[in-house]
Image 1 (cartoon, one colour):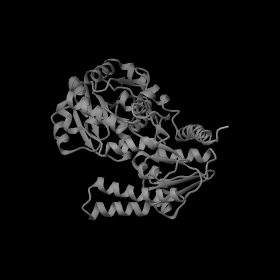
Image 2 (cartoon, rainbow, N blue to C red):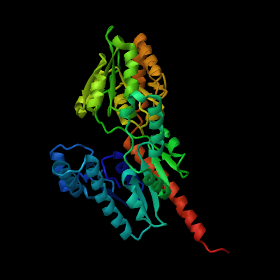
Image 3 (cartoon, one colour):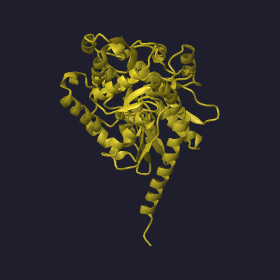
Image 4 (cartoon, one colour):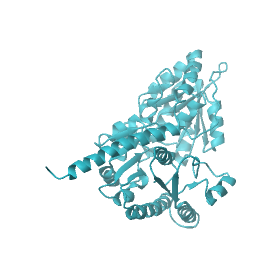
Length: 409
C-alpha cells in the first residue's frame, strides 16, 4: 500500500505479481491507466506518478481511494484552514482505514507491504500469520534527528534551515517492531536502520522515473565559470550551506545555480553571494534543461535515502559530487564516475571543484563514466529483486511459525 506517489511500492507490487503472487495494490492518490479516471487523467496529461501503467501480461488488482482522498485533500487545501501537512495526514488516514478493513476481512495468509508513511494502521490490522514488510525510502527518523542535531551544533549559522521530521518517533518504533523485514533504497539507509532494527533488510537501489533522456559528455567551454547545479529543497538537510560555502571559496571560478523550493529567509541569505543564482522551483522540463546546461551536480545532503535527482543527472551525462549520506555512493565511484566527499565538509567540496576547474580532461572522463554507472538501474530490476527477497524471507518466517507450532514428539 502507498498513500502518496512514491514509485517504489507500485514497482514492488509489479515484481511480486511477476513472481506469481496474487497482488492487490492499495493507493491513495494513484489510479490505474486502465480505469476511467486514469484515462481521463492521461488525456489531461497529468503527471505519470498519479497514473499507473500496468503491463498487459501482469495480473495486478489496483484498489484506490485516489479520487476520494485526493478530492478531500484539494478541498481542504483550497477552502479549509488545514495546513498542507494536516491535509496530507487526513489523506493518508483515508487510505489506512480502507486498507485495514480489507486486511481484516481477508482470511488467507498474507504478505503486507507498506510505505513507511502509511504502515501503522495496516500492520496493526494483520495477524500473526501475516508477514509484514516496511518500505523505508529515506533514513529512519531517529538517525535523522541525530544527524541534524550534530549539524546544528557544528554549523549554528545554518541551523534555522534544518528540516526535522514531523512525525512522532514512537510511531517509527512501533512500525519497526511489527515489521518482519524492511526494504531500503541504499546501503546508507540500511546501515543506519540496522542500529534500530535487527531483522532482515533488503537493499535495492531505485531507478529514475525519467524517460527518453539523451546523455552528452560534459566539457568546459574555454575559460568560463564552472556551472554547478544544486537541485532539491533548499534547506540545510540537503546541505545548502556547505554548497554555498564551498563555491564562495572559489568565487569567480564557479557559478552555483540553485533550483528547488526555497523560503524567504534562505533566499535573502543566498542573495548575499554574487556567484549564487537562485532559480527557485522549476518544472520537470526546465530541470532537464538545467541538467544539460550544468557541468556538475552538487548533492551535499546530510541525510537522504537514494537521491534520484543524482541518478537522473547521471543519465544525462552530468557527473555528481555527493556525500555518502545521499545513498549514491552505491553507484558513484569516487574519481571515476563522480566524486564522493565527507558529509558536512565544504573544504572537501571546494577541493573537488578546484580539481575540475584545473583539469580539462577530468570532467569529460567522469561524465562518460557517470552514464554507464547508472545504466543498470531499472524499475523492473528493483521490483524483481524485492520480490525475490520477500519471497525468501517470508517462506523462512512461515517455516519457523510451523516449526514452533508443531507438537513435541
